[in-house]
Amino acid sequence: MGLGSTISRAVLARAVLTGAGLAAALAGCGTAARPPVTVPEVAVIRGVAATEPAADPQPLGAADTAFGLDVLRAWCAQYPGQNLVFSPSTLASALGLAYLGARGATAAQMAAVLHLPAGDATALAAGLQARSAALTGLNGPGVTLHASNQVWADPSLPPLAAYLNAVATGYGAGVARAPFLTDPAKAASDINQLIAADTRGHISNLVSPGMLTGVGWVLTSALYLDAKWTAPFDPNKTMPDPFTTAGGQKVTASYLNGVGFLYAKSGGWTAVSLPYAGGKLTMTALLPPAGSGSCALPTQAGLASITASLNAEGTGAQPGYAGRPGNLATVYLPKVNLAVNGQTGDMKAVLTGLGMGQAFTGAADFTGLSLKAGELAFVQQAATLQVGEKGTVGAAAAAVGVYPASAEYDPVTVQFDRPYLMLVSAKATGEPLFLAQVDNPAAS
Image (cartoon, rainbow, N blue to C red; front, side, top):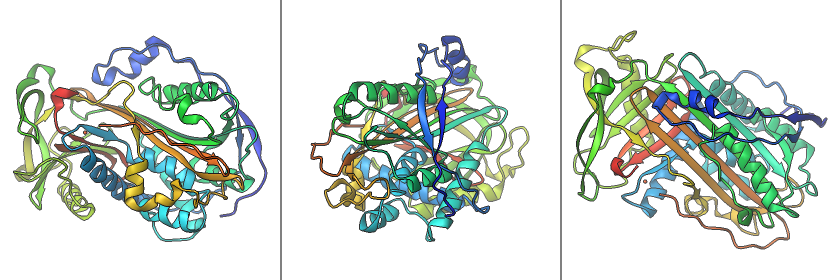
């Protein structure tokens, strides 16, 4: 991978977000201003980031999409009839930080669950570096995207130099000190304040002191998105109309509506493309076949097929688009706010069911992170997604805790809730930024 062993030091100084600044940042969906976020200065140790050969990020975009569908399918089976929202991209990044420290059977299980493309460490490093650059490249007029990755370590448990280099190369991540073993309350506060800053105040309680008791390392990933539609919906046309949940309950939803959106049909599914400003980002809203119950999801191949159909036909007849008239639709889409204060999800059961159970047992091998690293303590995620007349605001964060090798603690289990599917993804790479299935928009 061409990774050196030199460790550089820097200070991560985050600007304090004011209420006025937050109001401007969240104006895309009419979100009210949030309280100021106080962010402490955190000393960060950074490894040497190698400059890898140019690579195609699309295989990792496809991998994250396949992983996201697997997670949502398993999660929905646990909690059918619920509104669920998460970021496959963010969850894959947090687990990816752990994967770079995994070895042996633990690494093989994680690679299979994450659908990582075949190849050696150098190819993966190049792909991850290209993925990170592609995410940054989504920024532009009308689109604000901020992604961050961070490793947190107790001062008594510094990661290996090779691991520092690997996370710097693939994820642009550094390592910050957090007193997990001596002051978990302060460690939780530091992590939560930085996550709050990185998500513009949308997620402020990702981890708790109780979760961090006995933990030696925490790996975090955060994402904030504020994207304006290419052509905003007219708020004067937003109208109430019935919505039937998977359980047959009749509720009233507020429907955005507009004309000239590209659509496609495949395998009984109907998909509509809702483009964002700049043409680099799109929402694909997918309606399952009639009669589908809760947890109706396309296969990865089915999703790829219908997405390819949309891309082949153009991007719609709204200003600046060139879709064919026969493939354009009038769309009625519920206005939703899937942001729930404190909404978090413990992913251990889902990930174990998908095949990476060894990572949570004493047989786990994360010696690439540290020779003192044991099993995963928790995998926690939180997400919010708001879809309105002007565009979409979303925030997500994930945290992976790692025990020291000799520790034995009971993991914390936190329930997280979740029938149409929404996928916010990068058009060029397919990177899935947000994935949600909505059963009852009135319950947002």
